[in-house]
Image (cartoon, rainbow, N blue to C red; front, side, top):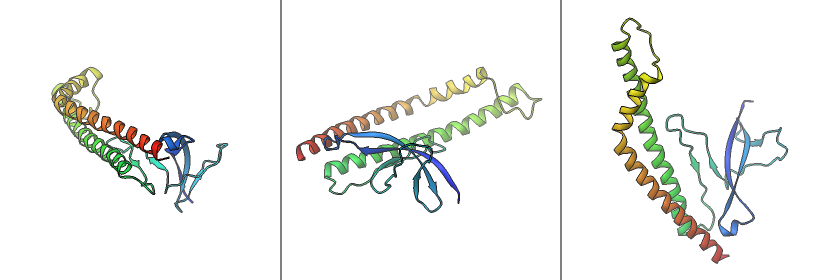
Length: 180
């Protein structure tokens, strides 16, 4: 039976869950081929992750480097809590799309730059694939200069989304406090 270790951060309800706060705990689990999760044996505290109730953060995407979120729908979820959860997921998807596109474009342009620069400066070295940091700095500066407007727009949109998430988080906490 094959298994692999995956480190996941789980938002589990703490003693102050009625106030809407969550404590973050890290659990290392072994995912077996039979889809059961077990705690890594060398850890003193043995606990199971309940994939049906816990919010999870997965390993980084290979292209965007953004960690995917799995936020569970809670029973008795209010409309405010639903908006909060949906905005978190939409923001994660927004980040994933932006950085996937950005990183793909960066990789393509970097490869083209290295090829072009190598042919111009090192015409006799046909297998040259690596350039010095000083040579690559030309590419990095020109790429970032061209992407300045995109990064500024992304940054503004990201900050607006995060401000809304914080406001909704406070509203959900107050809703839970006064409902309790």
